[in-house]
Length: 438
Ligand SMILES: Cc1cc2nc3c(=O)[nH]c(=O)nc-3n(C[C@H](O)[C@H](O)[C@H](O)COP(=O)(O)OP(=O)(O)OC[C@H]3O[C@@H](n4cnc5c(N)ncnc54)[C@H](O)[C@@H]3O)c2cc1C
Image (cartoon, rainbow, N blue to C red; front, side, top):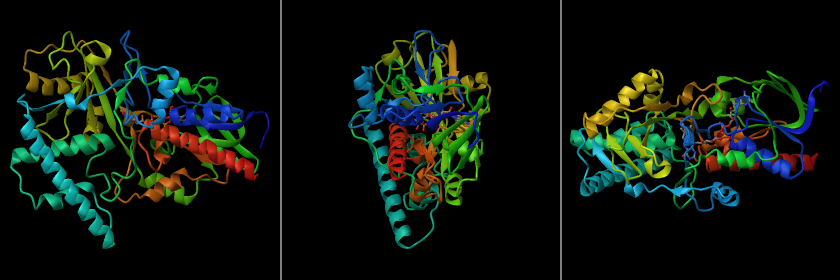
């Protein structure tokens, strides 16, 4: 490798939780490590916005998803970071005209959804046994629905369940998700928890004592027998090993040049795996006009996917703040609206439910993750044709010099903060092993 560049044992590219978890473990094991981060902050898709003084509102990840045995629970407890249980049993469900869906109607709707999804599961097993190709989840759902005629109202409620239970979780439309693998992977048991003081306390804890260089956009990664040479907008860095912990969306865009090019199997995996979109819109109001004690509510929309899922932040931040999520193609559509148009569209739904007299918001915060040049999306999903082998290919080291982390490389827990942390630790272990064999 050419001299004159800063040299360490390991360069980590990306100071999201995955890169930071890798760096943390390596630093604790006495490796010299430099983390190169494009943004002017750490945390990546864990980002707590403090623009509204006194509040920390999460623009990326919001929940510890299942607190039992979850590595985030362990970090939060060790660091004394406050978390609060999110009680989804307290949620309300409304029709778009504001009529509340009563419990028995809601139960019947849920039972219809579960029955259809059980049959979709049977259909996929049958197709796999018959050696048929993958198809979009919505096509499989449509085949099953053909056997279960529904009234227009029941169908609207069913589509709402698809948005809420599937598309919002996987950040992609059912027309984009693989029937074979959309729900591939695992989760943790226990309660879901939020961070009233901001999720960014987790990356901050991981980053303690780690050399992180902010504002360093990596453009090129060259590898050779002597190690890695990484070119940033602010100089060149060299190391024996590098961990690439940038989002799948960034790899898909080809924003980083790899020399020599990445192996074909890895490039095919980058292309096949999907990068989904889930966006948040926060509105701050002069007063609460929704159920004060419920942690959230949902609206069965007139047009599928629109302004469906709401979180009441009042119990967590003691302010009249509402959050709404949009996912998949609709989220991409909303990203193209101006802030004013976005707020007006959300208010139209809220006025339909709560009446024309509700107050206008006094402030808003809006994410546009698919346009973010250091993410190009919210998190990965299994698109039609993608398989678990693609995740393995994405994760696999190249020439025992380049290692890969990030949520999309985690085979059991992708698309989550805990998955990103576990992937970072796995990459750090792989470097240890490669070094021992050397
Ligand atoms: C809206 C939303 C809601 C979510 N909700 C949840 C949730 O409730 N619970 C949950 O568990 N997960 C959730 N997630 C997913 C979770 O946030 C991610 O899986 C996780 O944070 C990914 O971490 P990471 O380290 O893999 O990637 P990132 O956090 O994206 O880190 C990658 C880093 O690489 C940097 N980078 C990119 N390009 C370059 C470059 N060229 N040079 C240098 N640095 C670069 C980025 O700036 C970034 O800091 C959510 C995500 C979003 C967006």
